[in-house]
Amino acid sequence: MEMWSVWLYIISLIIIIATHWIYRWRNPKCNGKLPPGSMGIPFIGETIQFLIPSKSLDVPNFIKKRMNKYGPLFRTNLVGRPVIVSSDPDFNYYLLQREGKLVERWYMDSFSKLLHHDVTQIIIKHGSIHKYLRNLVLGHFGPEPLKDKLLPQLESAISQRLQDWSKQPSIEAKSASSAMIFDFTAKILFSYEPEKSGENIGEIFSNFLQGLMSIPLNIPGTAFHRCLKNQKRAIQMITEILKERRSNPEIHKGDFLDQIVEDMKKDSFWTEEFAIYMMFGLLLASFETISSTLALAIIFLTDNPPVVQKLTVSNAIFLMASSEISYV
Image (cartoon, rainbow, N blue to C red; front, side):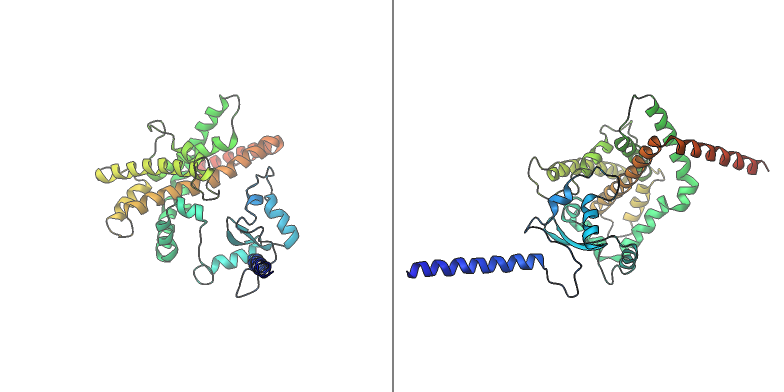
């Protein structure tokens, strides 16, 4: 009888502890008031629902369902991390204005590992470095260089790609746009020439992106494991390009890498590792976001021929007006 009492006590204790833990999981501690939402099941949260692909070009179903249920601000749990999702533009603007004071920049575990934890921590902890890097990037990709130098180069690159695409029976809009933008961005960053390269970096990055938002489990067969393999290949290629440029200081191509090599002589935070992962991150940020937008634009224009006709007429009128102004 005593043994049953002991077992009953143990089982009751386990149930109480489990119930309390589940309650704390669903209702995490907070100094203020948490928005409505669900934390999902323990450990996994709502990760599975989040990773389900959405065929819609609209807001992903995961976000849309919770916006309809909880409003523009809701809580959830993704990959074991509590997350607040906001679709309120005014609130988002307020947060961006208060960065470093009210909120701090944070990266997903998988993202931080792939872009190297030490590098992301340097950017997070030192706001001055972040501002310096932002100005450095704007110096090569901002409004002025875009207007004076990049737009003519981009127009030429697009014309060439359109000619190449016209010779093919069909193209996959997303991958074709990704390859075009990647080649252009890599050329600005470190004078990358795909026809002279022994390996297709654009393809490596496309494969890399497939596992970027995955659960960070480095196990053979997982998306994250494949992502790490592609990352190593890309990092190795960028490392070789940087070492070649540093070992030949007489080479000046006027690209972003030239500026980095010069700054590495003056600023201590510009280690070789930091420079490599910085270029890796810039490539990742530039070609993925822009290629997605371009792919959608191509799809919408293809599905709406009248819009293409109006754009063609408007462009012709603009060119005629520009030529008349130049003549005068």
